[in-house]
Length: 312
Image (cartoon, rainbow, N blue to C red; front, side, top):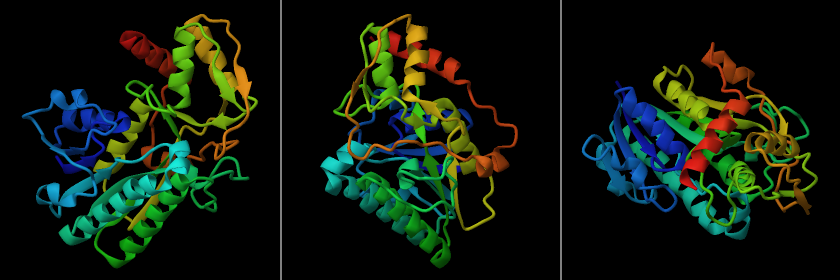
């Protein structure tokens, strides 16, 4: 059993990771300010785990619950690329300042393990497809740049201090609990909502934009596996995807068939900051996961669509 502090615990990804950690018997401290995460997701854990409501920048609120043997899983983030372009200062405050304060806390407490969410956005419009972990950084948004900065801090601090850092470059995560609200919800919830309502979706660009979609249940299992296995190096970065490239047109075809709609997409001009092609090279990840099996896209979409139908 490990002592684990998880930030963003009430969020889309964090709540799935939290479920696995608690089910596995780990001693968990959950931190979230509920600015985007749902309180309801943590209600079942009240009295069973320590839940701290605070912004991650306010490390004093949870510093007393961090020890040298604590593993930090840092998932709290300002996650929208378009919103980071509109409001780079707010993105910086959460994604860089908040992360850095957590790193300083790890230094002060002598923490051994620190896992942090990074992003495929660090690659930008990478001419190398699939993207390898050692490919150059070329972010096209403040969000991507801020993730690069965090990784650079981690690489340096791993050399200077006692904490070992692992950064997980998430590709396009989807699944139950992903938000449909806000100005820029993710693409799969939007397409699913249109499919359920038998409406035409809006696709920015010609629909040949590609992404590497990873099911949130698979992602959560990967995070918990990496967090609870021994780390033999001071600094690591892993692509977290499936290694499969899927176009938005193909994605809509899959969703429309499951939802039994024959509506065609409406195409609009590509948005600023959007990346044309994105797919992970996952050889390094497979080296530590061994016999891990990803959920097939169709099955994952079916389960996700069933979830959204249940909350309509």
